[in-house]
Image (cartoon, rainbow, N blue to C red; front, side, top):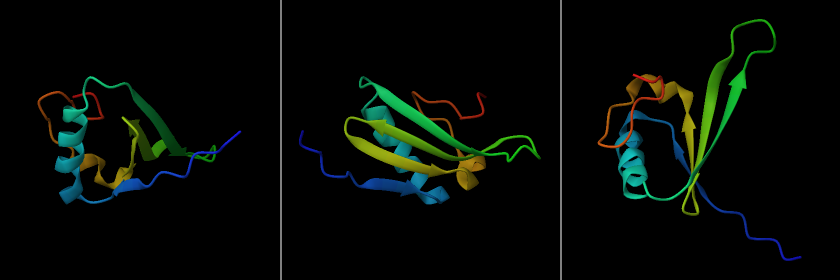
Length: 83
């Protein structure tokens, strides 16, 4: 069975990249979205999300948690913390 070539992922690791990601997700709002998270707990501390992986319409985005506090509302998306 043939294997698809690996897709390039867009790394979102600074505040400047967030508006572009949110605009892209708004533009693809009708498409199904796949989400995956990576957390760090090691059974010693409360879990914290370190990375959010988003796949939509063949595009892949890797969102570094360090920019979580910088999220802003867009027309179709709310902040990841639910507010």
